[in-house]
Length: 86
Image (cartoon, helix red, strand yellow):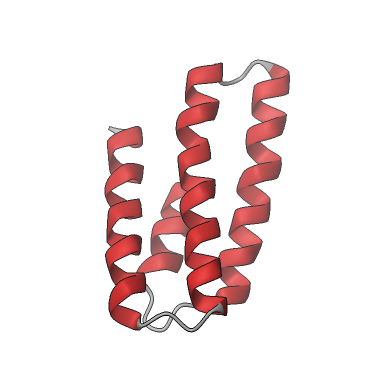
């Protein structure tokens, strides 16, 4: 799933519908994993940073932010994903 997020946010141009879909899927999976005990609360909160990052990217796309600004945020998000998965 995280590889899908990285793929979606490094595309040029980004597909806002794809980013929205991933955001929804991640949210559902995280809640399910937390409720079933498959991830800890700390892991849930760390992963929530990815959801928040996707929310920011979606807002930037919807509000016509420059590609450069979106790229900066996307690169930061990719770094967070790598930090979580390593």
